[in-house]
Amino acid sequence: MKVELEINKKYIEPEIHICNNKEDDTTRRLRQTVLEAVDGNVIAYDGDNSIFVRYSDIVRIFSANKSVYVSTDIGEYRIKERLYEMEEKLDGTKYVRISNSEIINIRKLLKLDASLTGTIKMYLKNGQETYVSRRYVSKIKRALGI
Image 1 (tube, rainbow, N blue to C red):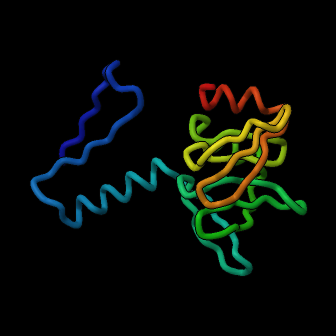
Image 2 (image 1 turned 90 degrees about the vertical axis):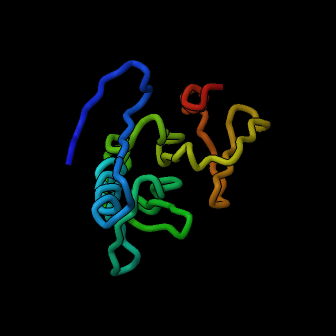
């Protein structure tokens, strides 16, 4: 197997290309390994069951009832990490804090409603709605480029 590293200013973010003359078990395993290494995951709990939730599957992370939860397209799960710990682990270009108790994945954002005075209502792709607290309005505008 040949591995190369190319540093060039034409790339805005890192790219990984897996090249072969056919798709086989090796290329599939290599692709899955790269995805898992780059994406990361968190252990979440659904009652007594523990599952791995990939960071890219997270729609939002929020605290309620003295616990922290991750919300995905298929459900909500409790996690052991604190909100600030998740904020440190996640990619700041994809995840942004919108209040003291919530972080959202901006790639899962469907639309914004800024008609409310001083705040923004957010509609997420999984059907949930949430609000940006007034302290974080300028931060979310910067993150979204508005």
